[in-house]
Image (cartoon, rainbow, N blue to C red; front, side):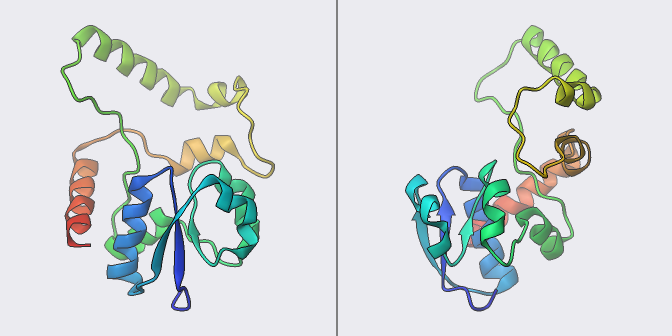
Length: 160
């Protein structure tokens, strides 16, 4: 970690970019040069020293690097708290009818993950256990504890 001089930042996630900056400054105590990663950069992945990669491309690119760090795991080592990467939000009032249907659909999906995985046409990379990932690596309810964790992260982002 201390040898990293440059980190390319995935263009698809401002949250992960902020998180790696917070971890770099406050946990790893490194100060690399930050460069934007565009889609073309990943076609020449062998020449990249370090990069933040999110989404499905992580499955295919992890073999190009001798060291792989899960940002959520690193955050938990740093703070003792799980990390909130995503949640459903709205910037205006939502009708109760929509909210009820949305919550029912979400609840059904969470309670029937194996059926969802069984019936998906999603292209799952070789070696990835989607069922295990959805059942064990993601925690779904956005409760008060997660709201506190999100606020804690936002405070750290202001410091960076």
